[in-house]
Image (cartoon, rainbow over all chains, first blue to last red; front, side):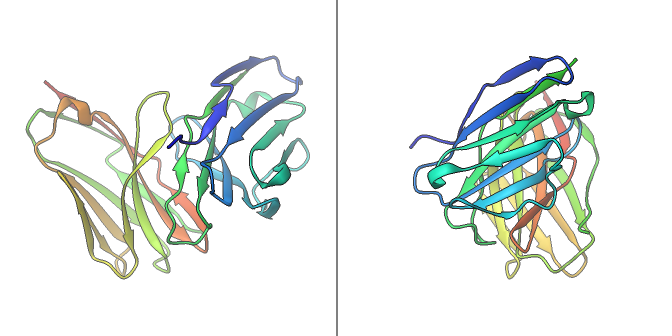
Length: 115
Length: 110
């Protein structure tokens, strides 16, 4: 069974440029999560989707970040414009139903460097 | 807000020694606690999940305990091997949200 797929794996951009990350969850998983992991810290949730609906985006900086999950399958996270402080690893995860007892499966992440 | 702390931040042991990793959390109203492994440049791999009603979980050389009332969990890795070198993160689940600690980076010396 294929795991969570993310692309690109690495991205280097100049500040003020836009950037987008793509995630394809495990087949059949209804819940999708985007996390940001700063160096030396644990991941922090940015947004959680149940199918197409963003059910928790309270930690998403909405002035520059946006996300979508069309058709309830793969998802895109966008930053526009990027700032130096956005340098981090962006992780996507999925779970079967989003219940608190469900295991979340993580992708390899996209390492973003903003110069 | 849930705060998760992992001590120590880094640990270096000779091969064969048992590992003890600690995790503490401030809000005991959790659904479950998970231990993850993260290799450099890789995503997170779930090692063990302990439901709030359970006291411990075991998988091979790994054993995790949970004391919800005191807000603590411990991950034991028996007879460590160089392949166990990685960062280990614990995460607690409150209302569908995972809160992570910063991790313990383990180095097992051959």
